[in-house]
Image 1 (cartoon, one colour):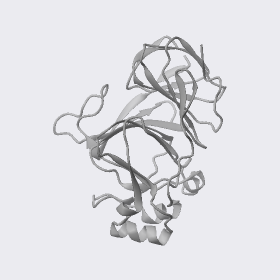
Image 2 (cartoon, rainbow, N blue to C red; image 1 turned 180 degrees about the vertical axis):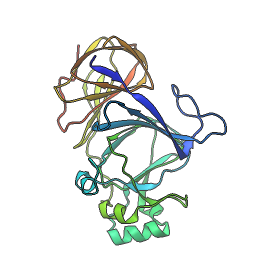
Image 3 (cartoon, one colour; image 1 turned 30 degrees about the vertical axis):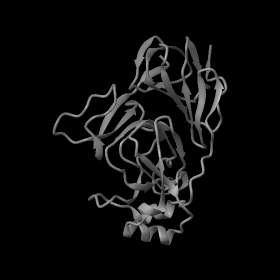
Length: 281
């Protein structure tokens, strides 16, 4: 079979929630809040991409991720570009991405130590349907009241610059060194490719598509290029196996896809080249 359903892993976080998202059972009363759900291949501990759902009740730390070169210099396999697709957001929800103006490392470090970094970063209002591709080195923070899907390079490597007084470790030396603290400029505008298919984000490390198929399709991937199939709503079959919203599947080679009307699917693949034949009739 060329399609494999990935295992879910629930991650407790101090900023997480007790009420998650349809398809995911809520944490038991009195238990720690859940902030993330990861989808992992138990037979492969080093795939290029990782898919997560995030559920926020409070702001995440102001943080940064290293690029490939900086991450490998510290003993990790890769750096961390990431993309976010907002599924739901409360009316006042925001995401900080980039700084309001260019900031040198000395100023950034002093602001992180003193707390004024909250005013340096650019808090942008968000709503369901918004998409951001955040390259490594971007100073950022996800705000409260948001449910999103995150696609990222597969590495658990975050440098916290500021955490609002929470008793968690900061990584100022590492984080300041890898930060590219400047205003965020989107590198891609979402575009439609064909009926039921659009590109949401395209960066140097991966491409993220959205599909709304209305009939049976074939997913065709070049040899050695895997894809992550992330159904947000709907149900159907993939290679004859049933899929439903709230799952993630790893896809290789060529597979047959069916989807009920109205299904909303994300699909990611790690390549700097858009795959023009990735889905066909």
